[in-house]
Length: 162
Image (cartoon, rainbow, N blue to C red; front, side, top):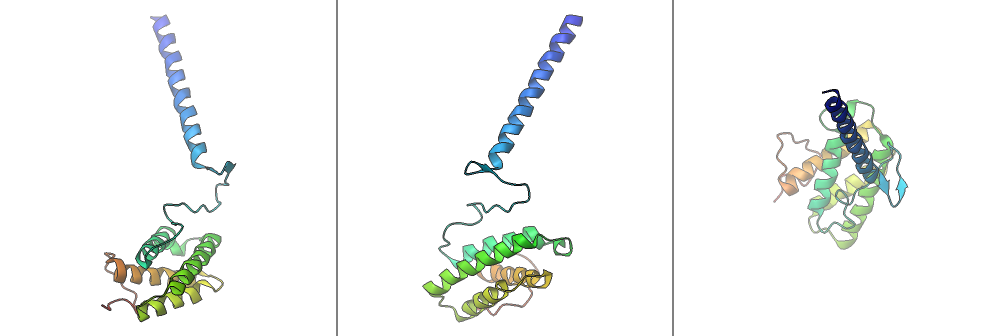
C-alpha cells in the first residue's frame, strides 16, 4: 500500500510539473513579439484590433470604440488611467483619420466629426479629452454600425442622419 501511495505521489508531481511547464511555455508565447520580451505594462497593438489598413470608416470606429469601452467605459475613466496608452491610441486615430480624409469622405457630417476627433486627439490628453473621444466614438458607432446601447451623448453631427 505504501508503494502505491509513493507511485501516486510521484505521478501527481510529474503531472503538476508538466502543467506548470506548459503554462510557462504558453505564457512566454503570448509575451514575445519579434523575439523580444515585452514588459508587463508595455502597450501592445495587436493585428486583430488594429488592421494595417481599414477599408471602411465603420471598422475603424468600431475598433476604436471597443478600445475606449475596455479602457474607460463602465466607470473606469474615474480610476487611474494609462495616459500613455490613451496618447498612443489618439495618435493612431489621427493617422487613420488622415488616410480617410485623404481618400475622401463623402458624408459632410462624418467629415466634421472625424476632424473634431483629430483635433481632440492632437491635444495633450486629460480625462476630459479621453471622455470626449470615447463619446465621439460611441455616438459614431451607434450611427454607423447600429451599436446597441441606450445612451447617446449628442456630440456628433453624424448621429441620426441618413
